Image 1: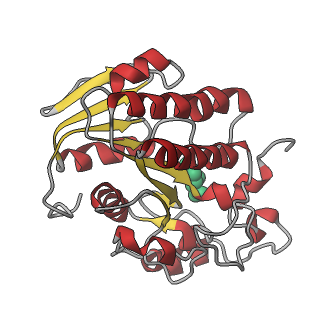
Image 2 (image 1 turned 180 degrees about the horizontal axis):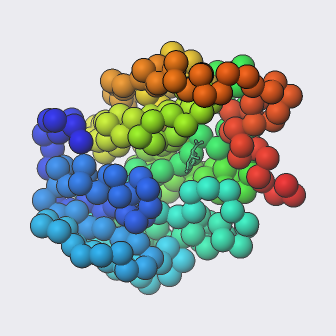
Length: 273
Ligand code: 15L
């Protein structure tokens, strides 16, 4: 957790979906610092509410449940849904139907802003020797990346048609430490993840903005210049782990698609793999 909250704002009620996932668990105490009440949701029971928390069990695929979930919230941090490459039957209800349910609920409950956990896998089929910006065409590396591209397009529609603002975060690799050479470029520390989400929640005007989520790493695949208005300033860097990661993985097979493409191993798991 940041020593000082990144900005002294207070939301009355923030909703964090997908709280039982890896990143959801990490964000739970962090986001509590920015609101009076943190509403937490997941599709199955996951424990007790702490002080200043409330729990609502809601399946993304259930439109009525989603409508109730969004009642009275000032903003949503949407971490819910499938977060890895999976068979289409699993992705469809949560990342496609679920996203429509989320945005329809936001429209009906008049929720003004959503911070959407998109993914770098929206552009995973760019090569690692390219630097990609949020303005470049999408190149999903599987059904998962494709579903996140759908989510971004849906966010654009709800901004253009209904004025609901979204910041789509194309999160790189948000873990305690980079696990491999690729993550020396894609890694985002948990503190920087908090900084990014808070910047996305509080930037005055965002419309629908897309921004890549990564720390201040020396090697990088992405250029966030078109999202400078979000005001995200990473403070950590994967480079403190560089020597250790390179020693663990000294030789790379340059013919391996997981080494060639930004999406890494995801490019080998998609449809037909
Ligand atoms: C993602 O989108 C996943 O949710 C996460 O588990 C990581 O695998 C990450 O991408 C990544 O690309 O490293």
